[in-house]
Image (cartoon, rainbow, N blue to C red):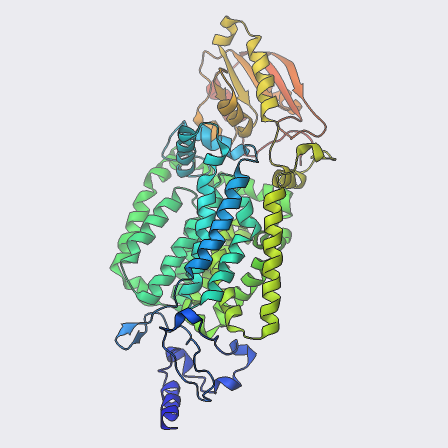
Length: 582
């Protein structure tokens, strides 16, 4: 009895594993309501090394104490976490990696992948709408295995699989045990976002994982106060900023959250400011490139907003789009995680992560950006939600989450094994941006070989003298990238669309142009050339817009103005897929 009374006194004085945060609640655990997330889970068999404490009622022996306030001292040393669930992470990530690798070669090239390959052959400090990392990765893949879409997509697969470990690691950082780690990892592994992101080399596939890793490092610093983590954080940030310039939004959210909820001593660390200086210096070359080319990245904001409204309905469709990215298991986990980050006592020291989520969501709402800009915060939400479920001991709820996890895994497996569908199964024309977006997810992108063959046929009809002064110009950058990558012995390819426009304009000696575009391009062609005539047409009723539908191959001779005057007029940032796609 004396020992139990002493335990009560320690708890009331704020010396419990909860630290000072628990001092306000001295009720016995048997009286704890659902509002405080229930009693603590029993210790798993492999966590016997974790300290065990008796409760006031003497009924919680063997339970794992909740995580202490980050950095809290216990017995002269910092609090230790529960063991890594290595076996669970290996199994989940291994199965995901195998399935994604087997699926990688079934999709043809996506348009952006072809653009990254083209950009990789034109190395620069910056590009119009992304950093130099993806072009360099594409160039390396094409050097290792020319023409292999599987090798090209390995970085996206690797990042997607690595994020499974990040989810488990964040759950462990929050104090989660085996169940929480596995649940968080499974939430990511079965998410439609992972399935989509790993299907092609893309900026969001790499950026999401790097952002999640950075936030994980910050969470870990809050517990350990180990300044040796800052160089690692700087390295991740430097790499991420060379993928996509979205990281400042996440950093702003973290900074605001820490200013409001702490730990404010972070701002007084010299190592932090040294790391920020390194990160700032790393973006100088890219900023110089942007400034020298008129800041094209800023111009992309309105274009993305217009595309988002057309494809998903804009703000009204955002919640549905985010739920579709998270999936059957990820959605309830993320909702529980958002609640837990602000209300769960065990996560009080990590409230700033909840603010970071809100800031990122606000950015997406205000700018009408892509829903997957939130993906870098998914691991934190999934991990916090898994922590909440692990501590909720009612059996009926755990039975429900297990069923949900099984259903989510079954859906993910079916999607990976079934998709992409054959384009021969298409029944209706693709006439809207929403239909185009759905077609790319379900069927992939098709028709590249037909486009290249049509252009190649018209090129071979040119005389040697005509060909010496001929260039190819395309209406959109996908077409240009396809001809640049897949065409054999074609004339130089140019396009005034998006990032391809900054690869250069035709030389003054280019007096004949084979222009690949839509019927609507005829008016601008006749303004720029003395002679314009259509040569071929690709307009299959069920064809892919801009590739095998709404495409006309024009021959244009004798430009009536210098290219320096024509090119700025033709420059566009929207991806035009031709008439009928709105």
